[in-house]
Figure 1: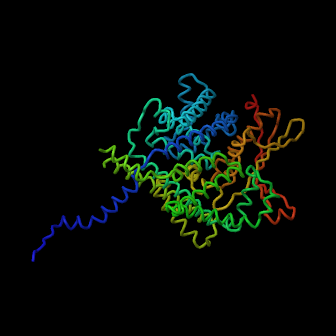
Figure 2: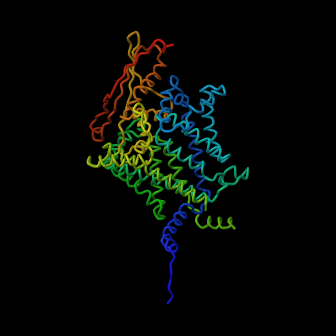
Figure 3: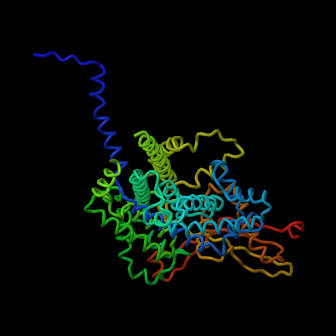
Length: 327
Length: 199
């Protein structure tokens, strides 16, 4: 019989093996093999989003972001509140200060910012100069969202988030002009899976917390919240007389929305239920956009969902591609 | 592998902070009493909210008494409770009516307005914020600026009385009975333009 003498080091390594297995599984989850199709969806979708955002705000851009005495409330109050959070958060005040040194008026700076944002949107849609365009779009949109923080709503925070992830993702994708014309290739294609995971997990947080908060409100269980939201100006696109005819369906719809959102982090990962959940979520956002006029909010959520879960995962094909590349 | 570790660490920190902010938001909603949970939960949730706020770095700084209220305005601005549209409940609609008093005794009624529909949505968002207690420190300034935005279009106005209030829509059954929305005034301000501002 052989006596086995274990050294303290080996005992530690035995103790660590489950931890190491967990770590390997975690790394496997974070860095799955992935193609860049989802990134093309996110890039072109956000390009369209930025264009629509800029065009929708075209007539009010100066009025919303001008300083006190010229605009609606003046951007100084919003910027002061932002500065309390952190003086490092970019605002239009930064750009105006830079413009002043170049003898540019505030109005000119705001016009340049708007043109920059619209151009960045067009470039993103085409996939030309993808990364610089993503950075410009994120920066200018963040300035707008922070300077007009008091006027911001849900769509702004989702746009900032989506543009932030896009900016960090391994651009350009193979469907972009950068790839066709300039033959530019991404520096870290192995990170495609990682950034898709980040987007997926982020959406799970959004829907779970949103669903949980809705479940805690009594108005979602009896349909009164749906009624209130649909008759409330400026979301009242559907006549109340028409809504009343569906009054028995509203509680059912309200409960469905709560359950759909709170269970999203579970059923969106299961292959069998993914398509159903994704279809329902997309239908919900399309309905929000069409029935309440929240077009920007609907579009950004649809784009994020499609990029995160709408494009089939590359699976074996990408694994084979990455293996070939590594060789 | 080194790059993967860095990315994994970033992932962990990023979503840890998001979790803390989200939990703080949910606990805040409960502590505010805006949920169906019983009031006994509120005290516990308020403590939990404090912990979550500390973790997310929202209460880690030493507050100066003068700027404390402003900081609280800022800290709550991007709260998930604020960001999540229509959760847990749909907020009341708010309206700002400006009574324009001319020198010749005429009276006109106006509301702050914008051109586009998207901007109108943002204006609604601002009005909803004005009603909240945490925006009380900047409320008068904002109402003054909104009044001034209308005043610029009517330069011969002598005084402006701004009345802010909540619009309560009828319930489904009330609507069927023919009831319409009701307006509940919350506060009002009187503004008069000084001669130096007129120039």
